Length: 139
Image 1 (tube, rainbow, N blue to C red):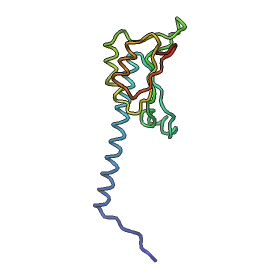
Image 2: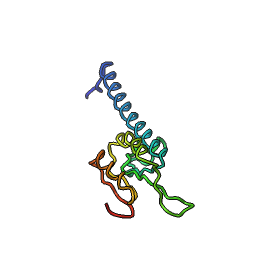
Image 3: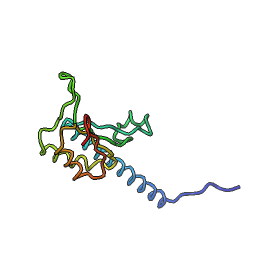
Image 4: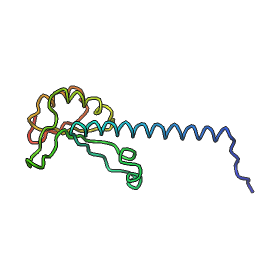
């Protein structure tokens, strides 16, 4: 008959250190995403999350801890006018979105309106890996 394996204090400390480093990295990633999403919302944009792999934890911890942002829309539906509208005033607002967009490593696409040619060029220049969906036309 074998006796249960004994663990030393050293192995417990190593395990706790590894677990703490992982949880710190995970929390930092989630908080960075939360700040980026808040900045996008502040400028009137919208975000789309990937489907959560852990829906029970998503309600408890919040979406930013369990899912990733995959798409950003830089326009809004205006209830009063019954149409979409561009939410950024000028290119300075686009520059203000550069940092939040860079903080989303799993971002795959950005949606813009068809009449925003300068903004589409700016997005292609600064984010060549993104798919840019032009709503209402083709550029």
